[in-house]
Image 1 (tube, rainbow, N blue to C red):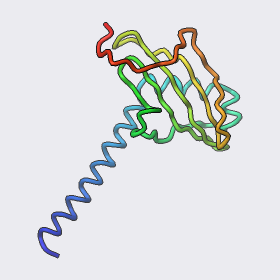
Image 2 (image 1 turned 90 degrees about the horizontal axis):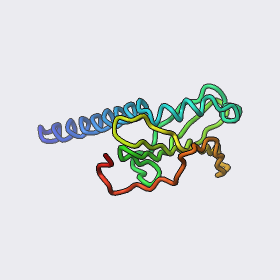
Image 3 (image 1 turned 180 degrees about the vertical axis):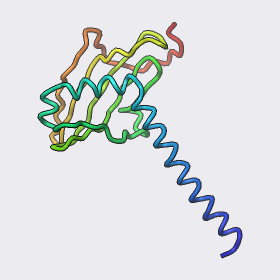
Length: 141
């Protein structure tokens, strides 16, 4: 094998490994954020969800490329978090917002879709609920 071929193969392997590493880090960071942690806590303590999915309930990898379902702009978050339990799997749909950077996130709505039913159950709707539209406003201070 020529030196150029070895460099190309090594470069390809390093690129794929680097992409996998950084994708994993992005997922870990998302799961640490309040707009992800709060809804997962609420789901795990919602008994009908536990009855359907089983215990424990864990998030799985989000589709980071789907910007229709997964959007965060610093003030509004709209997520589709795949979840699974021992009995079934589903998707937790999250709407959250905050007034300004540094504020705590307010979970305004949570929907759960379980299995292949394509039927959503809204199990949390905050008093500040509004359909979140991502604005082009960069600074809301």
